[in-house]
Image 1 (cartoon, rainbow, N blue to C red):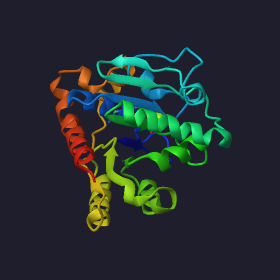
Image 2: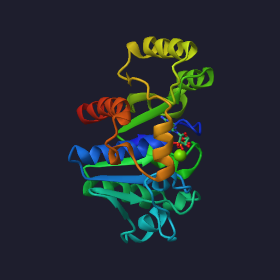
Image 3: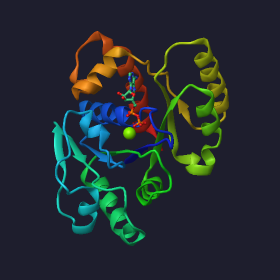
Image 4: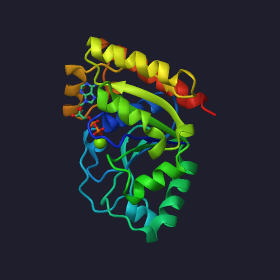
Length: 234
Ligand SMILES: Nc1ncnc2c1ncn2[C@@H]1O[C@H](COP(=O)(O)OP(=O)(O)O)[C@@H](O)[C@H]1O
Ligand SMILES: [Mg+2]
């Protein structure tokens, strides 16, 4: 199963959520691949490693050679070496995703903040589910209401509000979103709070599943919601 974490807007938490989610899935017994859709490979850095080699997903698609980086037990990372993947490689990249889908229980794709590049288009096509991290502000609401223009809304399983500060404005926006999605199959999870603890974990290259601190419990509960939706999605 392929899960695409996507929002065309940057800074909503795609990379940080991808890393927690991918690591969380391994704790439930799933062999997981985390694929970077962005050549910044932020989610790799957020898990404590850097991409130094030149071989990434493009190379993997072209030559089929293994390039994955083992980052945790049952978790492999597929970095991206360049954002320029031409249309000529389209079929090979699709094949590469098919191969990953067979080799792993779950493939999580950390999306780039763009919809125009070839890889973003392919990921939107091959994915079974899309997860959208959002910030609870006016711009995000507008973006969500235009979602149908960018992604296949039928594939959106979860919308995950992130970086929640607990203001009245955010709560009002959350309620509006809740109403908006009521009549759809999209599951709006509880909001993930903006915490100094999560920020520190990011800086230290750790996921919330590397930590036993009680400070992670609230966000782990949201990831449990997301994982439940993913697993039961049809
Ligand atoms: N819940 C959170 N609490 C604190 N900081 C967060 C949280 N979620 C994300 N961040 C921080 O916000 C920044 C942007 O997140 P990131 O995952 O890189 O977004 P994107 O991949 O969508 O551009 C990062 O510096 C990350 O550490
Ligand atoms: Mg990112």
